[in-house]
Length: 288
Ligand SMILES: [Fe+2]
Image (cartoon, rainbow, N blue to C red; front, side, top):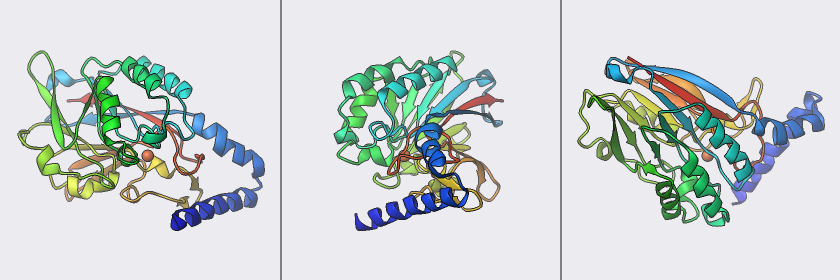
């Protein structure tokens, strides 16, 4: 706790010093506190691999992550996000963890579930655990919320997404690295080696381990893109397992066989600021 407070003070101090140095002052504070967190980047990414069956051409997957409801982000804002996601007409919706900032302190679950239910994706809605979903005795609460809202919670397990012609790809969800027990071997049980697989891992920095398995893509969140970044310096604070890969696309492994995409998430945690790390939705389009 002491360590956490000291670090928090350090970040606030460093951020304040940065604003002063560049003469941004209170305008920058207002920007980082109120403006940037309310912005939204919709990033698009093509996913191409010979293992993707032809009939999956053009299938659209939308990823959202790290809403941290109850901290700086509320249900009124989340309702708008749900509308935005539905307007993108996704075939598949993925949530990569950290739904509520403190699950046992969040008092509006009854209003949250109907919003999650409104998210529409004909080929399914899938999610995994983030560290905040396990924290505050949240594990069962999170599972209940997501399953009531028709999300498949993938806890070290896989699920085939099947089209009418019988062709399929696999989603492989692993547990959170900080507060859970990720197990790739267990998650891949029964999944054919020569199939196209997307791994969902809240923590991006598991990529080296994940690249040792026969999977082609990894989608993560957790890092918030650094949340507060300074020019020339980069992120002030990054969480454990979210330090090496903080945002965007990376190629991992000896033959760069694993593509990792790190989504910057929607909400904030610890400090109610975002600076040079805009909230993000990612739209992946499959190409054969
Ligand atoms: Fe998070």
